[in-house]
Image 1 (cartoon, rainbow, N blue to C red):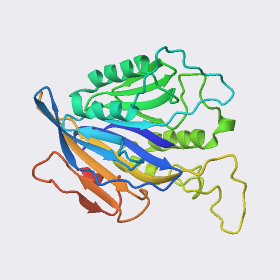
Image 2 (image 1 turned 135 degrees about the vertical axis):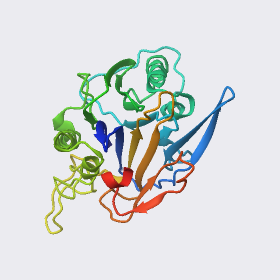
Image 3 (image 1 turned 120 degrees about the horizontal axis):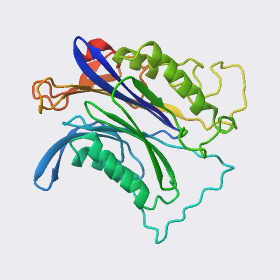
Image 4 (image 1 turned 90 degrees about the vertical axis):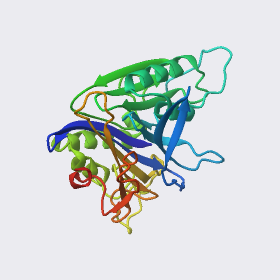
Length: 306
């Protein structure tokens, strides 16, 4: 379960889009240090950074960006337990959504083309038990928000303002209702309030650190608890104990020169949360003058990306 979103804004006369993800899991997970890699697609090379974590024998990408500013973040989508959702596709084949995610940043130079691929994947491939998903694909000028349930795909395109999502679809009636998943609805409402108040990089950082509902599973910055008082016991049977284990912000600066690549700034925390001081890094992975991540006290500060 995660909180994702984006924002278009201007900082020091430069147009930016920042895309973010708060990565929440139940089990302790090892998040791997990101590195620049190069994909070779029909003889053309694309540099990219995939943010990955350990999952059995695999190291799937949970977020990523390439040198053209194409990036993605995704969130698990949960359905109403009382809805009867069935997969009517014939001749099922195993579909790996994480491979699809990775192809967004290894094969495409703009968000629109990557969205077309993702849409086809959701419609044509068998999604096995994962009949639903929430995905955001962006580049320097556009953001596409995608929800899918059982082979049907719905997409929102935005070129300004801000947007956020948690773990329930809003364009499908089959989404998990509030009474089955309080956290998803509480986090989304709070994220929208915070972005409405401040939607630049600092506002996003404040969002990722927000513990409005205390150090509990219900806050955006999540803890494996339903109470932040040590001496009070509260039943937790109605909420899975997800807690924040990583966070990332991709800030894509529009290049004023037509046809030139944007500047990409990555801010991230691995194996911790954005509220942890001195665990953050800022990195311009595709800039030859600044190739190494730099330690920062907190991610999500305008001063980091200026």
